[in-house]
Amino acid sequence: QVQLVESGGGLVQAGDSLRLSCAGSGRTFSYYSMGWFRQAPGKEREFVATISWNTFSAYYADSVKGRFTISRDNAKNTLYLQMNSLKPEDTAVYYCAAHRITAQAMAGIKNMDYWGQGTQVTVSS
Image 1 (spheres, rainbow, N blue to C red):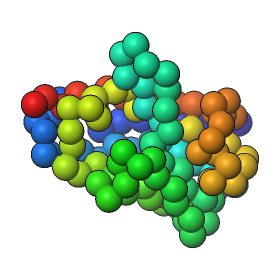
Image 2: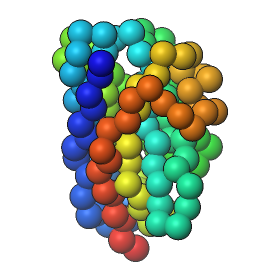
Image 3: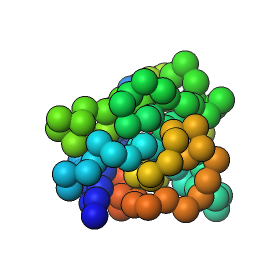
Image 4: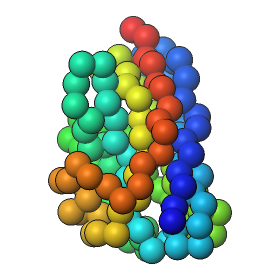
C-alpha cells in the first residue's frame, strides 16, 4: 500500500517558479514509477511528467518540456516537480501518482495504482 500527499501548490504570477512535493508512505515507494498529472477546469486529467523507479528515465509532455523537471528521492520517499517559467495555461490541480509499470508506459495510461489528493496551482497573467 502506498499513500501519496502533495504539497507546494499556490498562486503565482506568470514567469514565476514553484516546486511541488509528493510525500509517499510505505516501504515499497521505490518499486514504483512515479508521475505528475494535472487537471484544469472542464478538461480531462493529462500527463505532465513521469520518472522511473531508479531515476534513470524521465518523460515530459511537450507543453512543459524545458520548463518543468521531475525528480525523486527514494531515501525520503518523496517526488518533486520543479516548475519554472510558469504560464497561465499551467493552472490546474496537480496530482502525483504511482504505478508498477515503466515510466514511459505510465505517460500513456489513465488508471494508476495510487493517486494523491491533488494540489492547486494557479498562474495569473
